[in-house]
Amino acid sequence: MLAIHCSNVNLIGVSTTHGNTSSSNTALNAARCLNAFGAPEHIKVYPGATKPLILPAKHDPEIHGEDGLGGVEGLPSVNEDPSILKRFVVDECGEQVRALEGMIKEIKRCWKNGKGEKVTLVTTGPMTNVALFVSCYEDFVAEGGAVEEIVFMGGGVGLGNRSAVAEYNILTDPHATQIVLDCPVKVTMIPINVTHTAIATHEIQYRLLTNSTAPSVLAQELPPAKTRLRHTLNTIITFFASTYKSVFQFHTGPPLHDALTIAYIQNPDLFKGKRYRVDVELNIGGHCMGETVVDVWDYRACRENTWGREGKNCFVVQDIDVPVFFDLFFDCVERCDQMSPLNQSR
Image 1 (cartoon, one colour):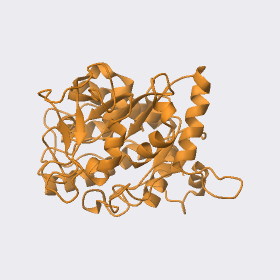
Image 2 (cartoon, one colour; image 1 turned 180 degrees about the horizontal axis):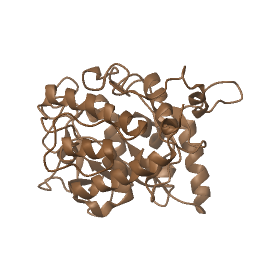
Image 3 (cartoon, one colour; image 1 turned 90 degrees about the horizontal axis):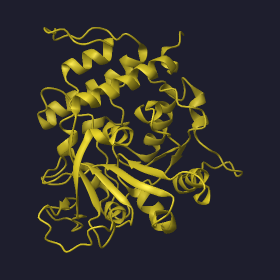
Image 4 (cartoon, helix red, strand yellow; image 1 turned 120 degrees about the horizontal axis):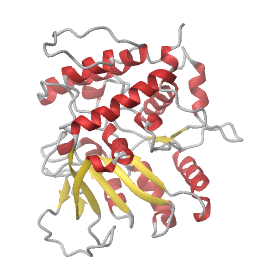
């Protein structure tokens, strides 16, 4: 929703992968969301990797439900809205165009052999698609290539949420993350240390539902949503809130992890961070597999001004202006409200 409605962001396509649920579910969910949030028709979904590079696929129904959108209400299914399927590109053989083909097609269209614009790759799940892309199209992530930056939500600095030290997105495909960190372009990490500060509190949920600031004394039971779109968004947050409360003891509300990647692109001044050497623990079966190891004391000798394998390869976000982030978020909700098919009379 933010990628569609942020003024400084030009969304050119979506690739999907395994993660919170199966790859087939995430592809359909992406297409359903693009339609519901009023994305232009040319924004397409390209289904990608169905499993990690090496490890078996791992899903997370405990947090996100069986289909990855647990508890959502008002988001049409394919049966209710067959136009959702138009979000998928079909080739001359009648087969869906997959992630690698779609990514290179859209990036080439923007880049125009250096005469157009560079792109930023954003990941909010396992990095399998991006790892495959940068491995196959190395020249696009070389100096002077088409990719300007890779921004990912994932990892933690001494903190995990699916093991003692590993965050879920990285744990699911740690080898893909290491490949991405080895790219010779700027890589920005938005870890759970930061996303856990962007909490959708009771007051935030009230503002989402009503488009107004919560009163000083707020009843426990929230009012009905002002629009269908706002109801749909709130049902996602509500389900997420209940699972985060029971599993992680988040009593004031759930964190909005993934939206921070788009907020970073829209307004990087909201974020503070520092450049470090970051690697991923790849010891399969060990206690620390999937940990993002951030060299905060500069133990490893690195080339200061070089990204990738030999350099300080990652800009690690350490802080965010949370109130201004939520102002940005609600600005996008207002824009979406004006365009969303969910709000059209039925």
